[in-house]
Length: 298
Length: 130
Image (cartoon, rainbow over all chains, first blue to last red; front, side):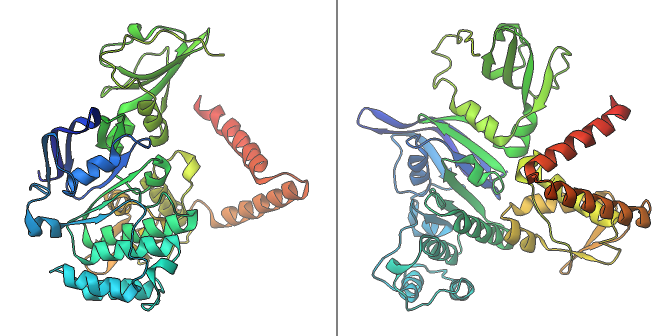
């Protein structure tokens, strides 16, 4: 199998602070990958490592089977839209396209001009006067017209209003449908990505908490509720991700590849939102913290 | 051509919602053999969902023998589903619409009306299942 991103022991340190630590990933090609985590978790660091803007402190990362900063050919294979979809405010839309054509050997003029026309943008308009949604669409156009095999987007919809957000994600999914490229996009809100991604990476406090196909993640996590009991009484094949207790009742979110048959439990499926929140609220380093004490909530 | 809608809060997987909407359209006679389903690109442009989700739904429908892809043309309905009784369907759609209108006229909001409907629906069908 070929991977869009393959990382092992990938770490990046700034002074004494770890921005990313011991990251291991093997993401198959052709996916729409959602990278989710709170602000400051290391999402941007991971994406900058993937596009070659940063070099790792230790460990390795390969993108489409090659080292990210491995010369112009590799740079041409990956399209990148940085946070807040930056454009040159004083340049017109048309000049952005001409610049894209000068800088990229595989520039697809037809696609670029076609998208600008479809979006109803005036090529003479200065990019600085575009709305947030239009600016994001211009940045996406520039990234896609270089005909990349993989598109990396850092928080592309965070600053957009709901309509512009929907329009942007629709455009992105149309591109995926037409060209079958891999996409990696980050967000601090899983709701933004729920409909579009089929692979999820949850990053919290500079560590990957969980990564996998969305359908597999949803089918291997369950919410169990029933009479109060201790996490220690659960079978060994059920990993507890989250637990809460009242004086009578216990609720667990567990990960297991086997079906749950214990009749004492009411078993419910989890949503992607439940799952991400459970992993986000987990102690950052479970092997070093003791089993959490039973907390009584009422 | 039908148009898909998504209910984000339903908890039903997106691909399954698409499959169910094709089933319903067949049962209501809105889709017939020979009709074309929207292309994956049309669906993703409207709903902003992953194209693989649409393809998965269409593969499921193909496995059921309800649709067949024609290369370069699209996906077409090949079989109809038995319609229970078109006249009964029309009659109940009518009386349901009347019921909804009278609930609105009584000052109930959409959430309340849906809650009443769901409670009654569950109560009615739980008798047979539980």
